[in-house]
Image 1 (cartoon, rainbow, N blue to C red):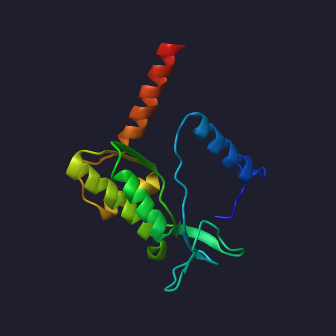
Image 2: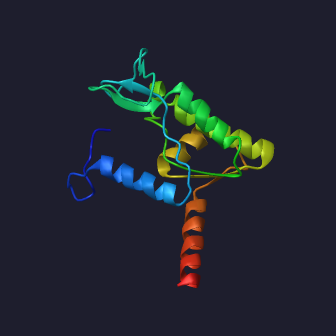
Image 3: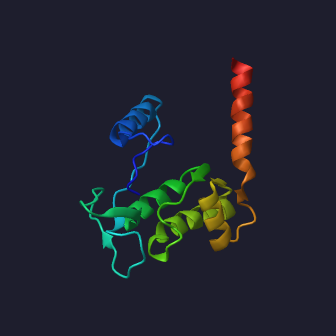
Length: 162
């Protein structure tokens, strides 16, 4: 979207927020995968001719509404080589078919990984969970309660270490 307001309506510097998050990840030796390309449009509506960027930059006047094909491949390769995947939020505006390819591709990669090699797929957030339920039948993918489990586990861990 184009909103840079916090929950109180205050303008936020999202560039600074992003830099801080990336610095924290680096300090914790966490690799952050960012989009290499995007599916864009000037308005958030279906189109038969979305603009696909050649790199991570979104042209002025456009909105990034889904991840692009190179990013899908990057994320699929990552999912193919991990033991646990936590996904919270669609890759794009998944309720519009033009921008659902990224979310569908990631959901399929996680479902395949779960069925084929026992990937622990944790999918949360209403939009992601609904999208996966609608698009993929995967009885071994666990939806919903896992985020509560993670919260409970983290809280127990924090309580036991403080």
